[in-house]
Amino acid sequence: MPMQEPPLVDLVSMFRSFGDNCEFGLVQREAGAEPIDLLRFAGLYIPTGHLTALTDAIIRGFDGLGQPGTVACALSDLDGHGRREFYVQEQVYQLRYHTFRYHGQIEVDRLRDQQEHALQFWRLKLLDDLRSADKVCLWKSNHPQDESDVRGLLTAIRDYGPNTLLWVTPGDRVHEAGTVEDLGDGLFKGYIARLAPYGNAADIDLDAWYAVCLNAYQMIPMFQNIERTTAKPAIYDGSLDGIIDGRACGWCLKVGDPNPVTLQLYIDGKRVSTFVAKLPHARLKNIGIGSGNHGFYSPAALRDLPRHAVITVRVQGTGFEVSHSGRPLSEYQWF
Image 1 (cartoon, rainbow, N blue to C red):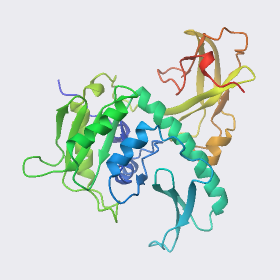
Image 2 (image 1 turned 180 degrees about the vertical axis):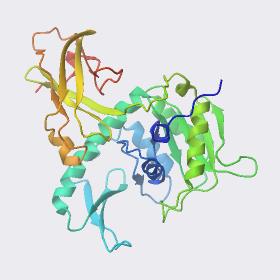
Image 3 (image 1 turned 180 degrees about the horizontal axis):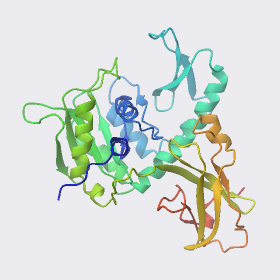
Image 4 (image 1 turned 30 degrees about the horizontal axis):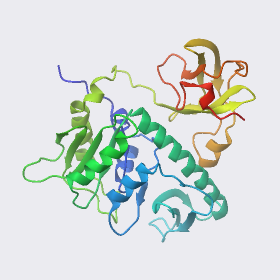
């Protein structure tokens, strides 16, 4: 029986963009998806060797990303609306990306501070996501790539977990646009009629991108294990950041929904409390995620528990578990 086609917004959310520019991030936006990923709108702006540089950065765990003094904010030329957008140039890995903030909207020093915090947050989230291996990683480039180099990237992400890599490249006489082939050992190759030019990433062949995503969805084994319903599944994001005054703290939200979500705290698999993530969270506010009021502070005290007790935070009524959850108390930072 053929697999049921998921709603488009859910389909494109099943992939994590690795660049090399913001094209696939814009594909996701056109479909109504706004996942939080470090490399969604970022590229490594170096003269040559983008793929090698990305692979090295992942091997290094993007160590040093977002540290003070490594981030600069500059203004673009005037756009078609007479605006100048701030963009970020990061100096350790030469990441460059849009901020979607414009001259006159925010002071440059404040924006730079926000971006330093954002990069540190996005770095930790990327590494945790790679350990979870819950999405297919996607690499595209307008330049020809050797399969051996692409497999080097696959090896790097597989050091974190059982990740899958989709490599998207222009099609040819043999490979029709929209098709996907299995190259073996977790590497898949998708073909698109054309990629957007680097000078205009918004010039996207959306139909071909959607076809590649759908064919990958129908072919890649990890998707066959996902429970599917006709209803649109909710997409959540969140993190258990640490222990403050003996209580679990962090944040959680339903993507695209400003309303707070209800969470449940488990200790060694036993549910001990139910609470709502609705508190102000400074880091979320600083980097513009949701309303910023998605923080939580669990009512159950953990101070007297043995350090090997496993702490888990889930969204009530779902199987979603926030990032960094499901670990012994001894592995969390205490404040």
